[in-house]
Picture 1 (cartoon, rainbow, N blue to C red):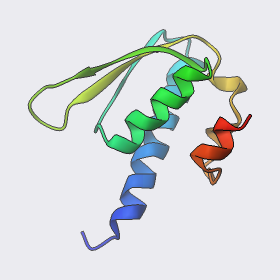
Picture 2 (picture 1 turned 180 degrees about the vertical axis):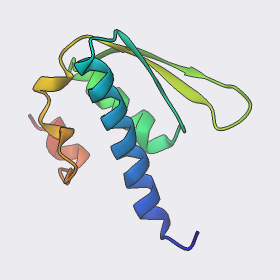
Picture 3 (picture 1 turned 135 degrees about the horizontal axis):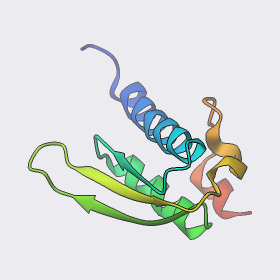
Length: 95
């Protein structure tokens, strides 16, 4: 596709968030995210640091790879679930 790379990156992150959010709403303790991107991994590390998710593990399946995320029931209290997520990493860090 001819869509700019940046849009794709953001939608991958948005999809990952939506997947985790929906899984948690259904009471799941684990969720599988794919495709894996550096942006998603960075974001997960940040969320883990702030206690919104538990452990996550990278699974290399020789394609795009996937991430298994442990949910701890705290995502729904996380404000970043809005699609218009425009707070920079450093601003989250500053909390």
